[in-house]
Image 1 (cartoon, rainbow, N blue to C red):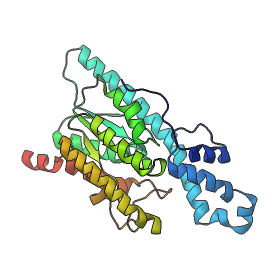
Image 2: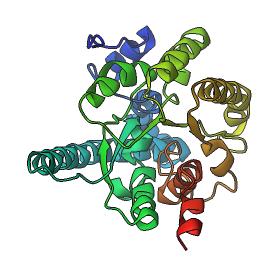
Image 3: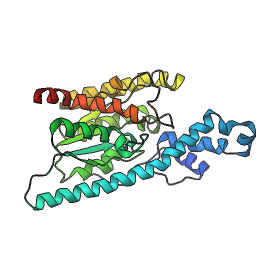
Image 4: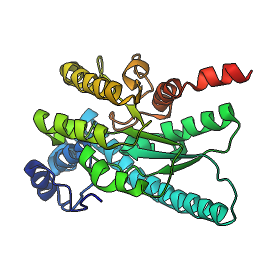
Length: 291
């Protein structure tokens, strides 16, 4: 059993939380941390006078705040859903019946579906629909993801919860938060550790390339994320893991594909993520074979 001691965050996260009065927010994404700091400016009397609060920066910080409220709602939904799934599964097993196939999801806020209009609007909900439609079986999903999670969180808190579950499918999508939380050396070390720890036959999601989005920041991020994705593919090949290539499916044009915080995908954007996962699972071939 892995240690469940708190996963450390960089010192600058604590400084930002102190500045904005949000100390103890252990699961904040980097975007939320920066937006909280920016909101100190956009919600100031100076911002009202100059119009900053009504400009792009103000709209962005308000969008991040809107999704923060959704984060709690989405987490509550999935927690209740997980309890019901586990309860139903235990009842079936006690009766000696064969349970429905189980998919366990590891990851961060994208696995929660944050940015979609509802929790099931994310890639998990959309792919679950495809799994059921294509296989003709009533798949159940246990969503262990947590918004703001870094790879060390997945290792420390999510993977241990797989004990006793015996899933038919495991997927893992994490790493976006680590880009700002971890230095490159630590990030690649955590990435290799995570990929070594996930169960056999896990499907790993790679990271999206934001070329043409976020301006110069998006362009500058492409070589680094490409390197991350290359390591994902290399280690996945070594372990015979499948890779859902979000980077190949979630692509321009970007219009309508991002939520109000310009970071999380929208429901339309998650359709691309689901398409990548469906392809990795070869559901298209399964449907064709059954026809």
